[in-house]
Structure formats: structure tokens, C-alpha cells
Amino acid sequence: MIESSDFRLARLPLNHGAGQMPVLGFGTLIPDAAVTISATRDALEAGFRHFDCAERYRNEREVGTALQAGLAGGGVERADLFITTKLWNTNHRPERVGPAFEASLNRLGLDYLDLYLIHTPFAFQPGDEQDPRDQNGNVVYDRGVTLLDTWGAMESLVDGGRRRAIGLSDIGLERLLPLYESARIKPAVVQVEAHPYLPETELLEFCKEKGIVFLAFAPLGHGMKPGPLEDPVITAVAARVGKTPAQVLLAWAAQRGTALLTTPKSAARARENFDVSALPQDAFDEISRIETRQRFNEVVKTGSPGFIPRVAS
Ligand SMILES: NC(=O)c1ccc[n+]([C@@H]2O[C@H](COP(=O)([O-])OP(=O)(O)OC[C@H]3O[C@@H](n4cnc5c(N)ncnc54)[C@H](OP(=O)(O)O)[C@@H]3O)[C@@H](O)[C@H]2O)c1
Figure 1 (cartoon, rainbow, N blue to C red):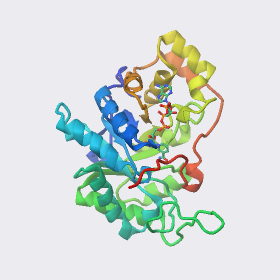
Figure 2 (cartoon, rainbow, N blue to C red; figure 1 turned 90 degrees about the horizontal axis):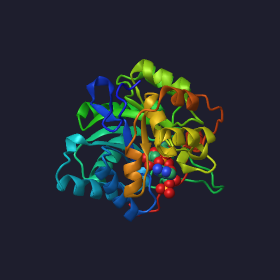
Figure 3 (spheres, rainbow, N blue to C red; figure 1 turned 120 degrees about the horizontal axis):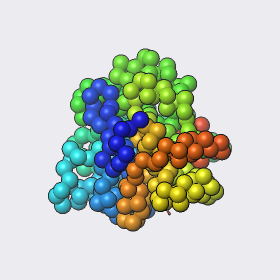
């Protein structure tokens, strides 16, 4: 549990002394280039310090533009920021990991990363086509590389010092466990979908036991309707405590000891989604008792993402 009741400045320690991740993170999976820039700027102004990126989002350049402008404007130092990006499925071959990392860093305009994640445990056919398909439209997987091979290349880059921590995304316990056991450098972070309809309690317990930060994406259920934002328990708690449903869902995520990612696209929503503080214990418990179960993002099953920006890279 995070001790403070105000989550705005809360951070969770990463293993190996690799720094601290802000509990409230801004996700950059935004289809439009101009909106990426304005939303990233608004998030920075609202107080977000963790920016979650990915080569697959095809907008690292736009995120970098907004971050560089924020840094140049003063008031925020690079050391205050926590920047994450992710290795895409087509770059799992060990010899492709270093170049993919450098390309991301270049697009973001940074000289180091706080966290580099393997985006999904699924290796796709290596190459520049991010979504390789056969003539029947099926994903072309790469059977010539294991997750552990890729992890070994990730470890080597930590040794080089240009990214402070490494981790995984879209992974379940069945694949995380063997990797955790064989890894020389243990994963610092696991990023997965999590919200009251998909609490991932077993994975969260494992992460807590091993000192891995559990980073929840879709804490608002990707904004899907119907979904957690409209759940009667959430709306009733929101009315009772004088918060919005989004603030209640984000508070619940932080209060159970996870870091989280949210993607507000306007300045007002950025301020709303950053204004997160703990719920009364009875409200927290009531939300934890919600029994609806629903996964909104299937990426964890196939490695193929849902919605991806159509921006030239
Ligand atoms: N590892 C992975 O495979 C993976 C997959 C998906 C996402 N992610 C990461 O997670 C980040 C978070 O994505 P997410 O979809 O989970 O973001 P989210 O903030 O939980 O959900 C975004 C949706 O919620 C709506 N929303 C945001 N703030 C709201 C508020 N205050 N009130 C009402 N609705 C609100 C947005 O609506 P509007 O569009 O109208 O603003 C949008 O439809 C992504 O940007 C990405 O960095 C990772």
C-alpha cells in the first residue's frame, strides 16, 4: 500500500536502485499527431512526470517534441521526468534490440530512458513492417527467438547504462515466472491491463512479493461504454466522495499499490486525472468487491494491438 493519501507526488521504488516511478503516469497511445503534442504538453503542465511511449505508437517524435518544449520552458528538469518506451514485436531478435532502442531514443530526443519494456512476449517476423501478415491475413510469428533471448539483449543494454530499468508488458504469470527465475537482471516493471473488472490479483501479489512495480494500463477500462466508468458502484462512490468516476478508478488503482497510465486528451481532463487522492477504506473495499469480469484489450493473447495511431514514423 502507498502510505500517502495524495497520489500526485507519490512514487514507487524500482528494484536494483533504478529510481522511482511516479504512481500517476500519462500514456501516449494517441492516434493523432497534433493531439499527441497538445495532450503531452497538457499532461506535463498538469503535473504528470511519467510518460509511457512505444515505437509501435508511431508518435515518439511528437511526444519528444512536447517534452523538449517543456524542458526548454524551464521549471521541469530531465531528472524530474520518468520516460518509458517499448521494444516492438518485430525487434525481438537480440541483434535488433540495441538499434531499436537507439532509434526510439533518437525519435524522443533523449539520451537515456528510465524504463525500456518488451511490449509483448510475442515475437513477430523481424523487419520494418510492424504488423507482418501472411496471404490469409494471419500474423507471421518468429519462431527463431525466445523471450529469454530478447531479455538477454535487454540486460546487456542496462549494463551499458543508457536505460535504467527493464521490464515486460502484456504478460501473464505463466510466462513471467520462468523468465523471472532465469533472468540475471530481474524485471523492474510489468505493465498490464488492470481495473476493477480485471484486477489481476494473483499477478499483483507476485509483483509485490518480488518488488516488481505493477503498472496498470486501461485503469478506466479504455473508456469503453459500458465499462468501469459507468459502473453503478463507481458512480455511487464518486457521488458520495465528491470525485469524478475517473478519479475514483484512478484512486482505487493507486490505493492497491499499482502505478497507472491514463490518457487524458484535454487540459481539463489532464488536471482531473492528476487530482487523485485516496478513497475512504469502505469505498475502496466496495470497489474491490465488484464481481464483473471483462478484458478490454486482447493484445495479451496474440501480441496484436488494438487501436494504433496512423502517423508516419
Ligand atoms: N502495453 C500495452 O499493450 C498497452 C495497451 C494499451 C494502452 N497502453 C498504455 O496505457 C495508456 C493508457 O491508455 P488507456 O486507454 O488505458 O487510457 P485511459 O485514460 O484509461 O482510457 C482512455 C479513455 O478514457 C477516456 N477518459 C480519459 N480520462 C477521462 C475522464 N477523466 N473522464 C472520462 N473519460 C476519460 C478517454 O476518452 P477521450 O478519448 O474522449 O479523451 C479514452 O476513451 C496508453 O496511452 C498506453 O500508454 C499500453
